[in-house]
Amino acid sequence: MKKLVVISGSGISAESGIQTFRGMGGLWEQYDVTELASPEAWRKNPELVLRFYNERRKKVIEAKPNAGHLGLADLEKHFDVKIITQNVDDLHERAGSTSILHLHGEIRKSRSTKNPSQIFKIEGWELKAGDKCPEGSQLRPHIVWFGEPVVEIENAARLVSKAEILLIIGTSLQVYPAAGLRNYAPDGIPKFIIDPEEMYLPADYIHIKEGAVKGIEILKQKLAKLI
Image (cartoon, rainbow, N blue to C red; front, side):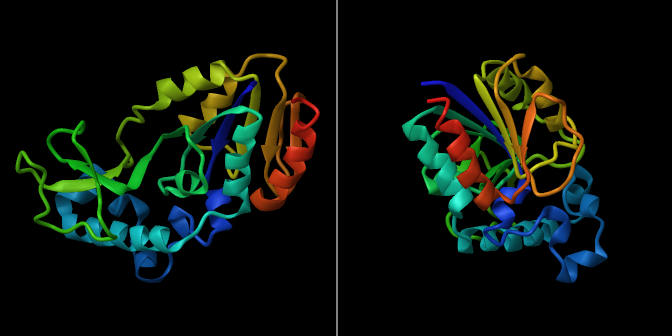
């Protein structure tokens, strides 16, 4: 089967009702996002940071995969699908996709503040002050915060470099380092982007100007010719 590499972003989960990071609204409008998602914020007010991510985690648990997520999982019947996602939710997994690389972490997991390699699944939606790893350090959200390295970026670039088909969905790839991933795609392979907005694209990209759900339907028709 041909290797189909997918780079996904917040647009695909927005159709499941998950707001983008900057669209949380309500109480959070009074804060700069860097006051909620940075090592400095954690040092200054860890309980505020925990509360912010607890609210986001609760919304993720309540959300369900949409037809876009399910459509990507269904493509595994015909392609070797590798998903690189900028999203911290688990909707790709719950839709049935089996190979997902999370660039920015996973909101339903925590990790040790002293040993980043110690990662734990969070049962339920709440992570509290006083929740500690076996070594005794406070647990924090397993999220890549502003100012922290995106440690999976090299693995992601390696996946893209081996793609035989590339799909970008739910992201305009404007934020680095993720924005640079498309540059690793081999020349001459089919390249698709699903996004409802007008955008400048290299000539070798096919732009499906739809949201994720409708766009996946159209993509499947086009990919049927490549099976």
